[in-house]
Length: 271
Picture 1 (tube, one colour):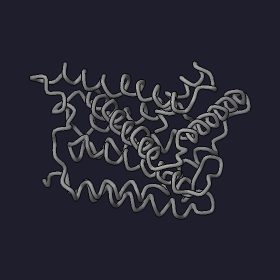
Picture 2: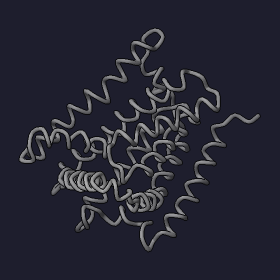
Picture 3: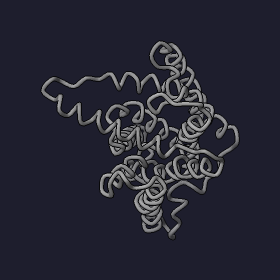
């Protein structure tokens, strides 16, 4: 979802802050489809044997309901851990000589938060459904097609060796986080990207990271809609596990670790 906000931020700057939210949403939709959805599909059509892009992207592989349930459970349980890591990441202070850069980064974060809040505002179910489609479903599908479905596989170069997969997963996760252009959320987003990458390799299906990505973004959209008010653009779902509730974040990390291990054991062939 933050990547879509980054795209909208560029449009907002180019067109002026007077641009309506509805107009920005349409521009964001077109930018996302044209930049992150169509290119990997067209590229896969060229690269794949017999022009079977969905097979090359591993979107033709079925996933059992237990794995889907486990994937959703991982993302729900990961919320406090993500918040804890985001809180720790936000406390990073740059050297005094780079104070100018730190000010720019914080100003960008504030602008991105303001724009995200504008996008999330919904006073009826219809707008909520549009937000879920635009800020949860579309980014989940398009970003996973671009990063896990395409970049990760290109870096791995079709080699399923353990070392090659690790390199591909982490290189893609770093790119995934960096392209969002949000320094103070870099670490949790990178780790989330790595988690999506490992789930992709273990299950062999792109639909699993798509489902996990959708769950993460969908929870954020619903949490904002259901909350009576937001503090600095954040709901309770954005703060649980951070600050004085750090212990929930630590517990969340442990639970997610166990669930990932369970998924790994379920999908790794026994020697």
